[in-house]
Length: 223
Image (cartoon, rainbow, N blue to C red; front, side, top):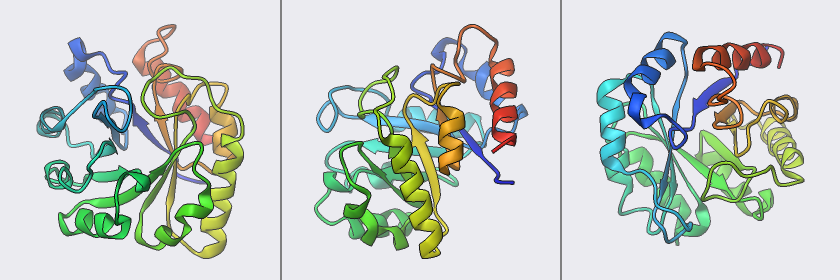
């Protein structure tokens, strides 16, 4: 049975009660804190930054999963790689030399990954796969939470998972975007290893955070 990892989207978190929620995440063994960094340039939104990451890392031992949706990338990598066990993903089209950026992440002591937009075919990044630990499949257009799943993205997760397995790459496939109760079984069946959980599952207001984590773990246990 696969060990499915849960990465709460901290963009969707309750900032007023953040410490309480982080305590719950730690008690329930949450594997990552997914942090969307947006600059109003690469994507049409502004969100979180290094100071927010620093506060999370100081409070919680849960590793940070930093998703850079910014331009330029290389200048900011050292600022986000400074925290223990950090994973940094970026969009290859946002840099001139993706392999150099991946090496920079590793040189800074962090783990490296890439994220691909819904319109980016898997074939355009296959040459980068030997150099990464995580492949983040965006199942919505980057920039905002609460969007609907783009058709065909489940098949893209399946394609990526199958290709990595057949090629012998030890890469975790991360599903990011509309990870809802309805879509989670489809994503898991397609081969997702990490679920970036937001408003349509983990932060579903119909139940408590603890109840939603239990439901997620139960669903992942059947993957």
